Length: 184
Image 1 (cartoon, one colour):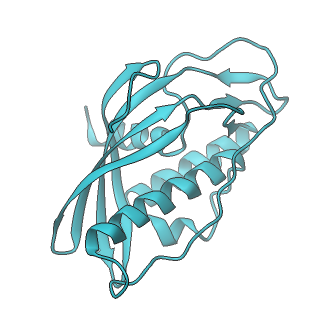
Image 2: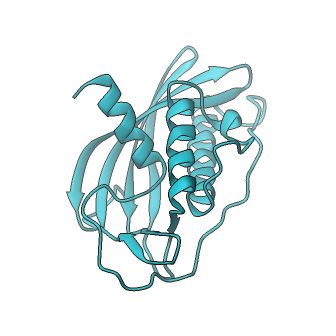
């Protein structure tokens, strides 16, 4: 897969939309999940791996929030990501906003991004994780655009800038239809 195709795919996964076929025309649930933003901890309070895990959790909380209300100019984007991911995220959010699409996580959904571990080397970290994705993408009138359900193994590259870990790249390494487990 080309680098451009991978970036397009990572933009899609980063915005939590399901990647396969869309659903029917029934109205989608109106319940959304929002997440508060958190500040990045300093190395004096957490181990480096705990800092990376916190960065992972904070990034995905931001993505869930922005998927529900796409805003390519949200200031938190620069606190969680760097290029090439940052540019891809902004492009994807801009497209979703223009189309009037947003992602909702229905009541009772099992949606999660689970951190499984990290390998650290100097100012770089490679995280392995997984995603249970039973979110629903809806259009401007609440019509369902995509309601596919999948389990995805995810690889994420973080870089340390000052006292913050920022996400540089995200890739789906394995994708399975349905909710088929997601680590321990």
